[in-house]
Length: 301
Figure (cartoon, rainbow, N blue to C red):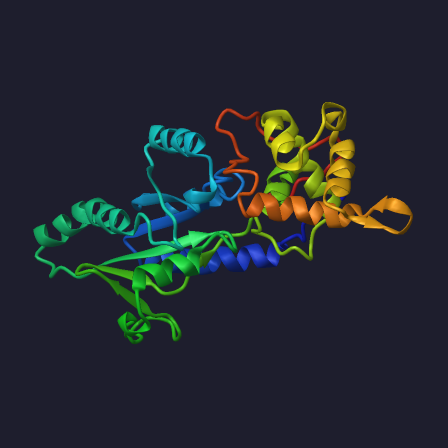
């Protein structure tokens, strides 16, 4: 087993993140969880369900334009069967924003009705966006907020630096994304987080990560490799042969005609991220659960 390709979060980081999110959730009525549509399982963290408790919960599958449409439909059905409200969006283009606002309003109606029944004057519904780093939380906040002018000043009783963004007539969004830590004890998830760019490129083992990506493509969509890189049948024997063949095809050569494998790996990674290999979802609904190999420690936060 390769060394973990990812920098680990330490227990102190996890504890601090949990405390902050717990405080944020106390202040909101509806919780929005943002996942990457290409890796809905790998970009999730189960601890969120414990933190949310009984509050209304929406899952957003973001970057849906980069994901396989059939897989997104399957994931939508998967979460719906668990009783979770799920929407497919693209935070960069704003696709799905209107549906998100109307969904928050629909889920919060019972809360408003309770206020009215108790004679409490109705206020705006408050919500927060939670997710792991680099999944598009800030982009979505900015997309929903429109311009900086819509951001409200600090309100009494709220921590300095926290602002509420007015969305529409009856919704306020906390202008601070809640950062969850990724599940780095799951090596398969860690590699997929690296492939999609959720983890900085300078902190993981590129060789290990690209081997995982090529294995996935060879197993599930070998025709994509053949078409993109014009590979012959004998060049599709295994991931090492594929990598070297792609390096030669792309001119990744150093003195002596040796293939610069790292350069070839970076080309493949960029091709995946830029959808030059098509729209590919790495997490499958019916995938076998990940189990650590013998002797490999797990670090459950």
